[in-house]
Length: 380
Image (cartoon, rainbow, N blue to C red; front, side, top):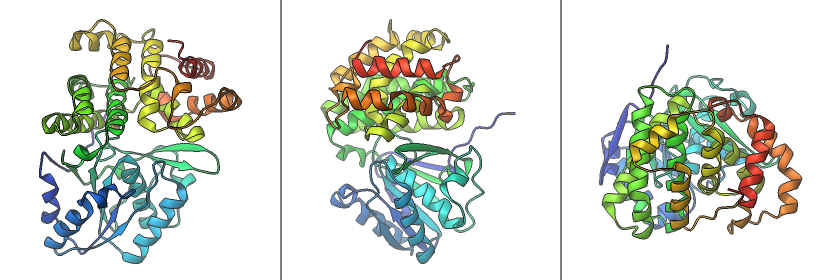
């Protein structure tokens, strides 16, 4: 028997942030990242809406781009002191991911990260609080998924955590928030949506419920991402990309992902590469590799009316100023010496990532190493 799980309620469209005024409760902890949500007035709006609902609130901010175990513990401690019955996560995927695991440790303070790493190991939540997710980026789909990614800074490893219990109770998909994103974040998060949709589509767990969502999400990205990258105030395009992110999230949350995310998680943990950027660069190499194992890319190509999916992705990356090779990333420096020094370990860790389990075919640590090498040098 299969199951298909999504949030109980999804409020979407411009102005949907007002849904916060309709919830019932006593206290809420708002979890967010850096200063952008406050700078653009969204934290004030959230607190005003909660106040209309007679809900007292406080803010935990400063969640880093790769949320750490230490940050999660700090947030859980605040929650244990404040005793909220709602947790409201607003911001990029990092803030949403961190808030999910804070929620777990708030309700189960006896647990450690190691306790919840096995898929399905997390105990039931909602004994103390429910969860609202408000994404500011059209990318991670954390607002809709059973996934979170937390970084162990000491080990330089990103850990994907999977549990049906961390699917939010309410997702608020308001395109006004991502309209404030700078162009490079629009590009990186938009290609994260592309990776989510395509990996869900070819997942060995894909089914008749996930495939239509993955197909529609892919088409929306092809039609709208470059436009909103070039014109961030294009609200129609922003709305379509925000919906694409959530549709892709519904798909992959239920059927998981593949090698793109396995490799992106580990190179992100090693070098701090932005997750969406790593996905974008790796995606065409892995599509090309996976084509030997599945005919579903051909089905997607027919649906989109294109000849080569991997070539089309490279074209979009070029339009978004995303490099072909990992060595050419400019947000961090990945020297050849540093890359080769960790390549074997990174490849083994990526092979053992849970996302590898649902990739088509039979990848091996050696094939993962080959893909990393091709993507590092741009050997397409």
